[in-house]
Length: 560
Image 1 (cartoon, rainbow, N blue to C red):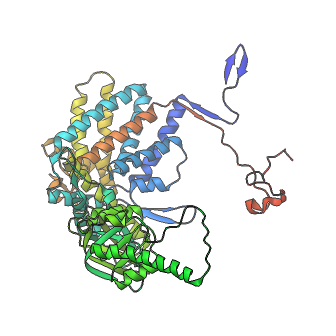
Image 2 (cartoon, rainbow, N blue to C red; image 1 turned 180 degrees about the horizontal axis):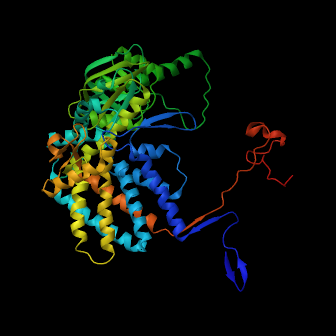
């Protein structure tokens, strides 16, 4: 509402709410801190899991920050921004989601104290920006060179990522699976840099057996069955034809009528149809293929001819699976049977239909140089299988990050602590109030080692003091071994390693979210629109409204 010549001028719709100044900022900061606090206990190898139950009663058990925040239904707009931080972190680098949210929450918590000291939010956000730029430089300077040839580094990165997950008991075997999968799909781009597309690593999951039975298949799994019982269910040394068109007689696109005057003419039509289908199958046989994978349908008559020739056939395969098969087997996808050549067929050492639980799947494996692979996840229950999938996704992402970025740092809170120490030295070179913001940023980074210690049931202040002393002596990767409770001078020596890009992205996304929330001083919430009442009997019965169209049955109050 505004005043004009003593008359009130109403600007906002009735029912709208407006919060201004300090109250708006306090509300936003409180919501963001609540989100950070919700995921804080799940950080690190000693972190706890969360059980999330949705409105339909479906249960998710996880300690993955992005999954937790995705599953809970957040209403507050500032809290939604924190959820976006986790989503960005997950899609960009695949790990460090909990770290980024905790860091954003701590930045806001400490910024709140500066605001109480009459320091303007703009000054704080500018200090945060300078501190984040410097922190990224520091992380870059302390990083160790790694890459696709560093087998130990890649394995340790994957194991560190999975240490905090439910799969930690089997992390070594799963780390090898992730490493081999990324190595298989990694390729050099035009600039000569390694790139790995994790979309080419297919994940198939099935409850049953244990997570130790999870395995990497150098090929692909099709969620299909062989089309005819007369076909072979197992083919060794398979030559695979990938076909995009249908093995059926095409129907005309216009209506046509034929006048038939004798039974012989009907038989001629049937014979011609059989001859056309036999001709199609002969082209497949002559190509030398013994396995056919078709994106569209296969006529019953064609199935019969294929069965007699001992060719295994699969139909109605998704286009995406056909493309993955092309990457895995090296075969070309044909759209015309006349174009088939033997040298463009795909190859697999074994194609076999196997029964997994109640479903029949076709395994295409032992490919020569597959650029698409599959990980078959097993586990005791559906909940465990889902969590193993999330853990493997994170592990695949961090291995990919190291292959592409080629930099690693020690884990266990060591890089955050080293960055904080160097940032405090940097702050002393600045003048004015920005120095306070940089110091606050450095103090906020301490939340990671403190939370790791707290979640392990240790005294966080005692651990922090010991770690700072170790770093002051020049041990830039000194950290806390949460398994033994001892301070380790180099976390890399005990295999606790993380990609530098994960730490960099966590700092970038948390600073941007904190800065955006701090820059808000006015929240205007529009009035929520009310749903019109449902007609008696629901949408199906229409409540005797005389056959009115859906959506017209519920008349607003006062209209009757």
